[in-house]
Image 1 (cartoon, rainbow, N blue to C red):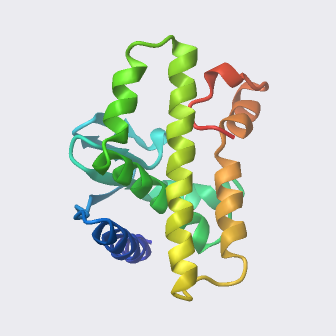
Image 2 (spheres, one colour):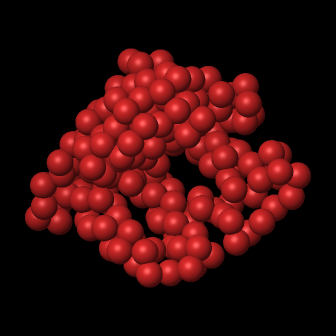
Length: 182
């Protein structure tokens, strides 16, 4: 799994490096931190319960390898491209950081109610999904995708949506509490 994650990361670096270069910028590659159980980042302590995440403080993508297993067993998201989607989504947050979007959103969130701040977080997460989709487009252009890969990614995204998780763990859906979208 560690090797697969590294290969996907390298593909994202290639794609985003070219996109940034075409726009006259330089893509700073993120660090990759693989973990199980718990990890300390510049953003604080995280347990496996938080799953994969991006920390702008150290420009690192933290991939919980046990989450990769849980995608299939706990969330019903099968296939290698389901995992690739999760990685490219976290890279999407890195791209947002490089473009200054994370800083802008965090600045705005501090002045908003919890409901409005959550709505901003949902937009941020959906934009990371969009950036993941951009990466997938370039993967397809390079003829790297197999039949069913996009379906695997879409299923993974849907499986970890706020609506699905809230229904599963709380028995009801509370849209004002969404932080990742549906």
